[in-house]
Length: 265
Ligand SMILES: [Zn+2]
Ligand SMILES: [Zn+2]
Image 1 (cartoon, rainbow, N blue to C red):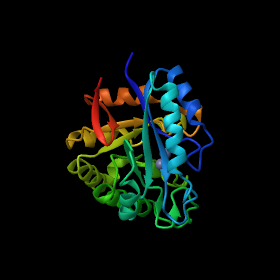
Image 2: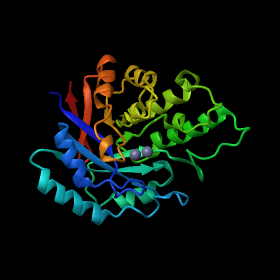
Image 3: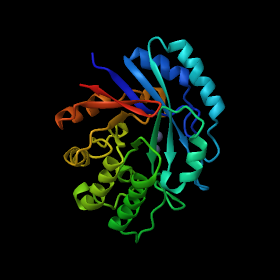
């Protein structure tokens, strides 16, 4: 059986989940995961509901407890999902300085003060909305603190119905800039499988973008479900890995204390 990991998981240490870390660990062992990274929301945008929610001490205590209980069967990694890393460079730097995180996702959930899943005005232009979002992702890719860039084209999930289907080719230039920035900094991107369970039938980012990443020389890819409930754990991991195999990736990556490690297929 393949070495399976889930590198995007939220517990009740995140403002938008009630799931318990211990329950995830039990489930992880049950479904054959070898590794799990708890990537809790860490948000500093004043409009973010998650602002001030994450408590490092409580989280660390739970991680320790779970490592004691399950550590012989499951590798448990300490992680965070940093919101809009490009806007909070110093704050993130000083928060992370003395802490032992294994893995950091960098994600854009806000454009300025507007959350992505907001109400869109009827006259908002599709192309402008996407470009505005990708500009933020580009800034994060270039400057932000992260190991893996979270759900790169997640905006496609939140746009109004009147927008047409998302075609990456229409934003090829800026998306390639984002990928190039990631590669130049020896960081990675995530393949986020939450879209499979939400019925979109394709991962985040879309396969085309992952293909460009490969073409541009990108190798570091992490894989996660963005679980907010225990039942989400592990969903779509096999589909995600099949996509990576088909595109010719050698494997995916895990992280220990910020160091990437290739897990070969
Ligand atoms: Zn996210
Ligand atoms: Zn998440």
